[in-house]
Image (cartoon, rainbow, N blue to C red; front, top):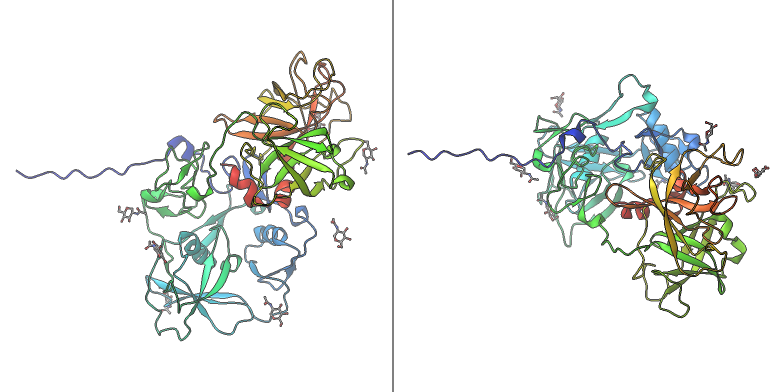
Length: 513
Ligand SMILES: *[C@@H]1O[C@H](CO)[C@@H](O)[C@H](O)[C@H]1NC(C)=O
Ligand SMILES: *[C@@H]1O[C@H](CO)[C@@H](O)[C@H](O)[C@H]1NC(C)=O
Ligand SMILES: *[C@@H]1O[C@H](CO)[C@@H](O)[C@H](O)[C@H]1NC(C)=O
Ligand SMILES: *[C@@H]1O[C@H](CO)[C@@H](O)[C@H](O)[C@H]1NC(C)=O
Ligand SMILES: *[C@@H]1O[C@H](CO)[C@@H](O)[C@H](O)[C@H]1NC(C)=O
Ligand SMILES: *[C@@H]1O[C@H](CO)[C@@H](O)[C@H](O)[C@H]1NC(C)=O
Ligand SMILES: *[C@@H]1O[C@H](CO)[C@@H](O)[C@H](O)[C@H]1NC(C)=O
């Protein structure tokens, strides 16, 4: 009797309906847009260079030998001129170019040779730290890439489409002829760069420790999973937290994640190391701002050492007087074990208008105290910063909290909270005073409302998977608890770029799982 061998069916973790949306790293329903992009109708589209920050201490030199004021300016220019890439940080004084090549050129597995600006000698990339991310960037740099236009939309709104590396190879073999230098360059990339020059490149000696040089194969052959950009990869490389496609489309529609990667509520797989150990309590992001003895406003912990609050709550001149109370659960009990922090700096929105409350938003950076490397304290947990104005719509129920005045306008020291609904554009109720970057919220009868003293505190909305987003910062309103004058909030999503510019992108991304 012949034993029949059943073909092992490949397990698919993918969600079919989700795949039909063809999400990529330019889909802001799924992921953040890059700092040089804006989220418009669910797509990340390139900013025009003038929409980027103007000032920077850094300059950047592009491959056309033109200097740019900052990375955003260069990348938004690149969106329109795909032949222009990043070359080096600093000025454009050098005669030479950044250059990479494969060695041998037509081999199935080639070493990667790199010539840095102002260096005469070429170096090979190191084996150490070599992964699919770096390999994808090398192949993209070498022209295994293209820009596909999305239907008939003009090329300014093109979505990037890359063909990345087929696979990356680890080897301890030396390139032929044996490199006379024992040094190599260790590359560290995010995987979305268009030039290897954008990655961190560090010269390493091969004498000690990890030896060997990286190898790569840059071509595509049909595989079971077709990425949105046309690249095909093995099914077992989808839903593993690694951007194998190059456009991330293999990680955005996953009902489960393999190889220990983390399954986000949005069905996105991310590497474990990006995951923060969730600590849940009722209002773990709520903080109080004190000016000497008095609680003056609320604030919202958004991770690291950063607090979000309303600009009208704080004054630059009093930065040394403010104290942040974190780790408060329900009640402010004087003398109870709360953590207090002094401030390192205070950033008020540069276009804040104190008479119209336009751009009523500020960031406070706490000073980490003594032994604490970070400002994370036991009972605090950050709220996520929303990256798109489309995440929550009018009618959505959200939670507002604060230590504001209660019904009898008596001083209230117990944290109060309530459910309210996001309201459509309030420009009729507040004629001429409801401006861009503002959001209205309340109940039909006005019974639950933010009031004086709640200022700077959070309006938090939960998505369908109970991930908490700080949607609004308590800003102003005509009177408290009156149906026709609902509370007005600073709409945080509008300020995503501003916040990420100041606190650093990695910080707010880290918690937005
Ligand atoms: C840019 O920097 C210059 C000189 O440092 C300064 O005068 C100018 O106000 C700055 N502009 C902005 C928009 O920050
Ligand atoms: C290259 O050398 C020139 C001239 O010494 C210098 O001005 C420039 O900053 C250097 N560029 C880099 C990227 O090191
Ligand atoms: C590599 O292959 C391409 C196409 O097959 C060919 O045109 C080119 O001349 C080859 N280069 C070398 C160095 O053999
Ligand atoms: C590549 O080499 C590193 C050490 O340099 C090792 O940790 C890793 O497992 C290797 N990967 C593969 C696919 O062999
Ligand atoms: C995927 O499966 C193929 C065989 O079907 C195997 O050779 C390969 O190593 C697997 N890749 C990963 C990353 O598990
Ligand atoms: C601030 O807002 C007030 C009231 O809307 C307006 O009159 C004033 O011009 C604004 N100030 C600035 C600097 O924009
Ligand atoms: C609100 O709606 C009015 C009229 O439709 C519009 O002119 C205004 O720009 C809107 N305001 C905001 C902040 O969306």
